[in-house]
Image 1 (cartoon, rainbow, N blue to C red):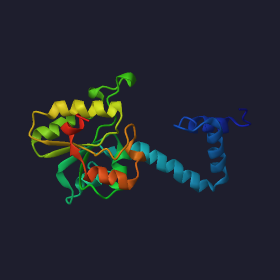
Image 2 (cartoon, helix red, strand yellow):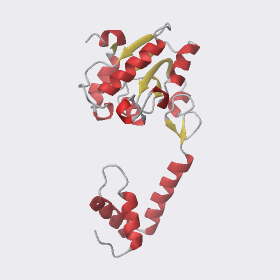
Image 3 (spheres, rainbow, N blue to C red):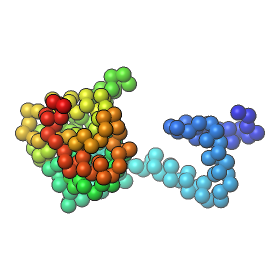
Image 4 (cartoon, helix red, strand yellow):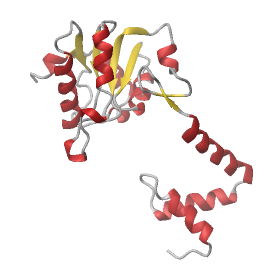
Length: 205
């Protein structure tokens, strides 16, 4: 792809670094920005800089937040005795969209995947065990995707906390095996949360 401008080429190269964006799509997006009023592009640039420089990780659940503690953890109407364990922010957003869950979350930041070099030490598992050890959590809901990596992560966490007096459950298999939570429709995901089953029973299936 030949560019008449080095500035244009640099912009296209940077945009094409985004997942799912090839060079042609990146060029189309960059040319679109060029056609917009300059202040629109400035707003976008400022939003991205603020995203990168000012966003925080909630000190309680590791969700993305504007403040030290996210709005969900700060909400006194949420049931702090129930914690839903998810992979990332997209799963929190998916479950919240169902309006069926009123507990708190714990964002692991990924799943155990030896092939990708991700082990338990790379995830927020230790802080989860510490929560359970404090005795304030009565139930953990495993809501990771029903993939081999998700099931492996669920089982690892389960073994870490099985000595504690705590209920462990998993979302009902209304979610197809191999599916990611963020792609499930709201009704199915909501029913899966409400109709969760004991985690020990899920291992027998």
